Amino acid sequence: MARKLLPVGYEPISEPVRVFMTFYRPLPKTLTKLNRQAHEQGKFYPRTRPDVDNYVKGLLDALSGIVYTDDNIIIQITADKKYADKGRIEFEIEVI
Image (tube, rainbow, N blue to C red; front, side, top):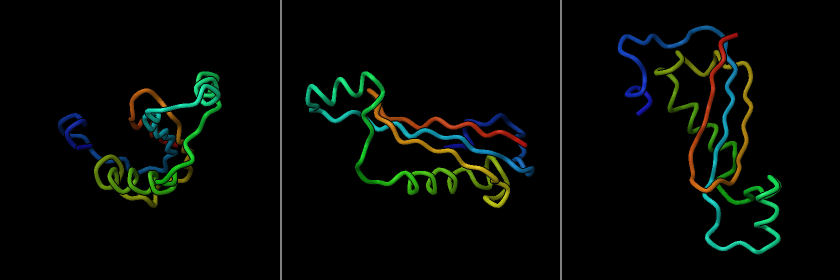
């Protein structure tokens, strides 16, 4: 999937990088009034599995060898797990 989104002739990054990622989980179908208010204030977080570190490992493994040469060039990772109306993954890779 990642390869399809890259331009033709793309060469994987081989320099040190920082990776910033946010994993958005869909909101539960039922929310209490308090949880809905907390979500609207940005204070309602997923406390369910999978754990954020499992998401991180899956994304980094999927990108390795395609977007960057190998996991060993990653020097910093920032990851968040949040709720949103629709589930998705957003990430940014910054070459150092």
